[in-house]
Length: 222
Image (cartoon, rainbow, N blue to C red; front, side, top):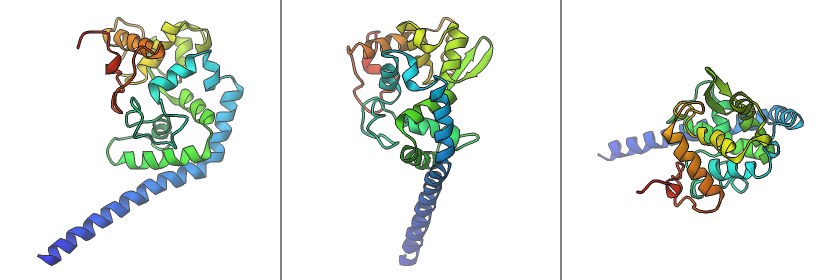
């Protein structure tokens, strides 16, 4: 019985060690790639495609919805209401560290990579890369990647020139670009845009970490 118990403990220890190594490899890869990523982000910012180029007040809304603790966390956030389990850093890690991200064990590498990113890149550099790589769904019959590209494809103008309602539509689709549709009647999208508007106006706030759909800001009766 004791031998069986010790064997189980050894197996558990090996599994945890393997997971730690897997996460550590993600951290190491992010640190190793940091200079190249910073250069790429700097180019985007120089071209006017960084967070500060979204327009007055727009960046604040994006952060408030996508990652409310972005400026204070180290790549991972398990405390801030509305943060969910994927920060902007982790979302970016999914696209930089994987050819085809799969949930589950991939979350370990994703988290390690996000921690490494936050050590290598400034918040503004992370934002520029996030905005350039984020999936925005289908627009005009084509799948669009990149927040600025989506703004031009959907509205024919950069984000800084969008009305708040239009900007909030772009932010709204980020949570489920394959499900929410910018160019078709979509009750779910319309409801999310209304919730984002209430959040931005300070009329509501998420009540728990998992409230990424902003249920605390719902407009329909519970």
